[in-house]
Length: 485
Ligand code: ADP
Image (cartoon, rainbow, N blue to C red):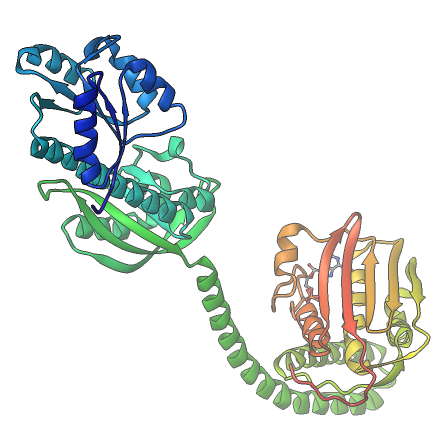
């Protein structure tokens, strides 16, 4: 016996009871016999049965009158009634009340066996179906993929919890609603509908990517594999779409593309900067000579100074672009860290000496040599100071807090300017992001590359009442470790 069942036999005639138990036990089932409803209630307190075989007439009355009591004791067991031809009408009543099958007296063992086997097979199929349902539920609830079902008009019939988790849409929001109108951006309607119609005409569509609009308006790039669902007659009733969120992949691809574009721009700009530097040097030399010739002409001298300033601006602009494009080689040498920013602050005195500006420094443990590329880090401080001085109105307070510990240097530079909005924070280190009319938007991107070339990090935050930049550098004690970035 492949699937032995646990069977309860309820019969008040002792011989019949023994006979029934024998037949069933011979087939390998686990059988218990009782002689009344009261006994049934007692044994079902501790045991559960899959089948109960009961005489129609019990000491407490007829089964059709006792059925609700019996069913609640048997908790889901199938009930087979043993009945005589004469009782057929009442047996049909019992059927209506939930009895599964009947066996006619006198009992023929093969008939009883067949009935029990049919129930066993039915139970096996039900168990299998329940197992498949549980598995399908598990897959639907745990897979990190969207499962979406649309009717043939494009209305949403069903979707899994992952879709809700990703997009924020709930069943209340979308069930029965038009998928395209609610979740697809208008400019994509035509293309996405074409795929839907193609799928509904029994074409499996795979690898189709489109954006799905979430409840709060965010959009997600989804790659779909679609097929149809059919009814028992084979008629297509719905479209099943399984989608994977590839938004991160798309962003990474865009970044890679941008990096390629920047590399190409970088190469061009390096060549341009190199050529231009020679030309600018010639302009500088020529204007210096001209300055001697027009010494006595104050108007001409004024114009000449303007040309020289423009020349200087152009030179530093080209230098910035060249720095951005060129690989960064780090050459470490021992230095006291505070000396780096102090040197820069002094160099920048033309920018702050005539304003109400204060640099407030505090540092701890920095009275030792650290091994960094000081000229490169000067560039970082120069850019951070210049940005703070440009952003803040007088009185300006720029604060530096620096801690040098065994394995790292942690420095925070903050100012009392307008700060940086969340939106700008996300783009701050992207090349060419600037809010200044004449800015290049390369400064912070270069700073970040320099710090990262030291294996450190540079992040920006919007502190209360100003901007805040945090630099973290690992301390290294060996000198001259060239590094590329
Ligand atoms: P640029 O100075 O050429 O604009 P940066 O990369 O140095 O390029 O700076 C990018 C942008 O970051 C600036 O245009 C400015 O909007 C913002 N920014 C940088 N530092 C500060 C600061 N201290 N306070 C407010 N905004 C800042």
